[in-house]
Length: 250
Length: 322
Image (cartoon, rainbow over all chains, first blue to last red; front, top):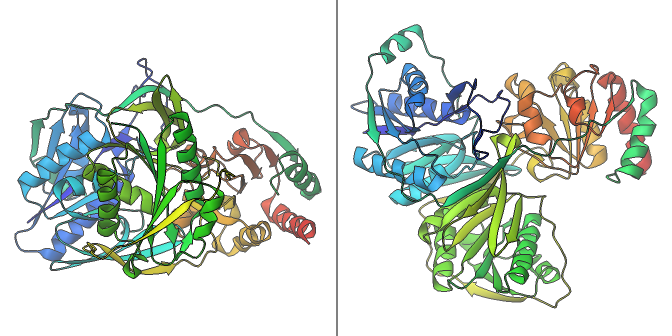
């Protein structure tokens, strides 16, 4: 079986965002793109699952993007993923159209275990895994921090407010990974060399209907720097007074 | 399609969650603005404080009930909501942007053939069209958008929309027993974490960073949090160092929070951290380095030693509360 992992190519989290000239997206000039941080946990889990299943199982990564994503895909392959698919579009698709493209590809691959990061740190929607699962008719467990797949049975723990839920389900399944699921490995020199010879299949996709239409992108209103109340313990009573009388928050 | 709004409410362990009132209030506001009907749905077993909903709405509220719905099941819950949306022709479906809401909303969107957006912080009617605002890049920028489908599903960020009490009269709460359940994916147990409050739900957060020098000093953070009734948060540096659990992490690869008060202790303010907390209403920073970026977003700051200031602050708060 092919174990699939969907990877997105996003600006490094240290990026300072500048709005592009279209006023609808960011200015990519000088921005470093990386593997989406949550996808690192998804990739690691796909590799671990392959090691556990053994036999003729293999791993494949799927990315929706343009040619610039190839550099990120090589890094995915360097971590040990066997092959990759790049679904090419120059448009800026919304979550639903990305999910539709991914679902179609996963269907043709016949994968029954699919990993995602729990959210992509660009648009921060956190729904592509669930949408893809639903489009495929797969089960889905999101925001997973512990996973155990035995035969057809899946037992996972997902992070929720103030605790964890233990969830039972079965294959075919989509899992979205949260930080803490595992400890992602680093690429080895051997892995990096091997990645150069691995196959990236490129397919052009048609994005027809973008239902979430961005009207405008703006920077958040900037905050006025506040007041330094003091430099030692003598400032504490004044701080408490301000919080109580001026801010009225305590 | 005629406009008709559905508010999806959430309970945990038989208690309605606070964000449910926020969802309900937004549904009320939009139904006034669009001059259309609105209803609400809640799924669960016994819900002890269900009558509390009367204070926020005079609409019809349907409680889908079964003892096995006490715990969340994505397959069962999404089927119940989707069937209801399809049968009763709702055009707008609002979920809270919680662990449950964000898991459920996309499935309902697909099952009801609608487009979806999550984590909205603003919903406004402009010349007959709904415009939404959502933070992207962890809040480093905001997008304003429309949803171009007849039916719209969206989730709203907790703690942003006001829960407004209504005196329009009582809601009519109707209980529907559900017999057939799709339990292919189901929660079998719930493990509460040790911390008392979760950062994503707290009104006040006290966070510690690398300036705390080691995990053994976090009792200072916990004590202040305890005095304030606050949740404990942490920066990525201290989570990666293993001093604190990931669930406490605030920032771009942790949780994005907007509490009323955020107290940053020994946190310098890396861009990823600022992205996750700068929408807090009031920010207090305590840091030795007066040039630390955290002071650029703080309303009040003490540029001094956290080890001296934290115990004094805790004492002062305790004095105030006693």
